[in-house]
Length: 237
Image 1 (cartoon, one colour):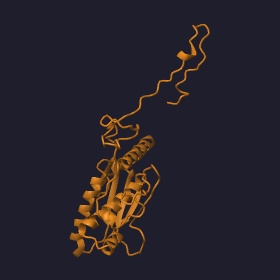
Image 2: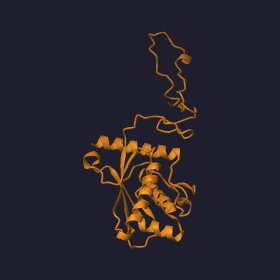
Image 3: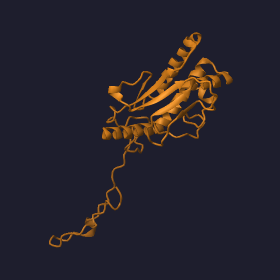
Image 4: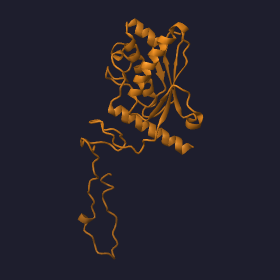
């Protein structure tokens, strides 16, 4: 509430007893929001306290955005099926862990039309022979939910081979790549921190050493973007 809003300077009725100006000023400051656990300052749109991780509000707990990680475009040779499947299962497990505090429904199955309609994000994993200089690409609007991303699995495997990564490191790199592109579709911009999952240009070595994770501010930003998106969808329906 601004100072102007807290000033009651409306003209009084002259028929009424005159009220001194000092009594017509309301300078009471609105209460400052604080985390119930650590008492740090928080903002009303946050869902998690950046200082201690406390869940601040659960009134939007039923809000979810569907993210379809689509692997149907992967043409895998029969002799490589078991190896690729093992990598994907491990990478997906790490991906689910990274998004456990974010209001999303991650699935590798096509979203049910009755439940989601066209309101989901499609992350397409595929293999192609065309050489490119990226691992993935996503649509992006700062602070907004968008609906498309792609990840070149062949490029991730090629980068892994060039960096001589083991299976666990390859799984980490793949999970970080997918999480990075999903982060963009949920409104996150690039980070200047080299170890951040949203760093501009994932480092094949650094991001193969750890599974993906988001810090509290990024979690709050993504959840806020999802709430705005869902509110717009509900108003448009």
